[in-house]
Image (cartoon, rainbow, N blue to C red; front, side, top):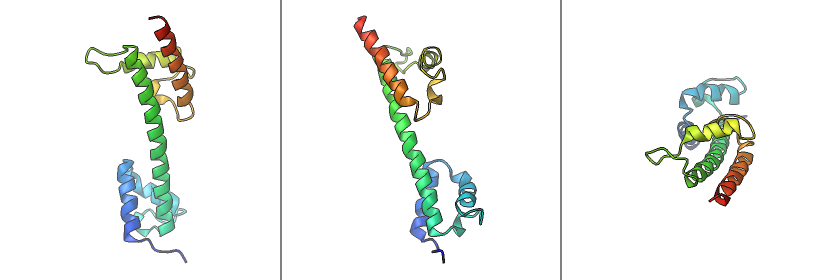
Length: 134
């Protein structure tokens, strides 16, 4: 017999859905994690809610890792003065470099968690080359 969810688990799941900006898709998560038994998050069993929470937290970790690597590239771009007049990084220039010279030939924010470490490594080499010319 499946264990009915606790209020604490339910609130934790709702908090995770909100943090991942997925609250409006809660019925999809419920349907998928209940084995198509229900679309209502309130009808999920404890283990099903925990599976939803784990999926959301794992996707959040991946996004955080991607974000950190993108910030590293943006930081390097600042050091090479790839900036707009307002001091913000010139994302259009980073995009152009990624498409024209990057290893994956696609826009900066379209790189996946698997591609970003390579992109960071290549961009660091560009920075070293830039510094050697100064």
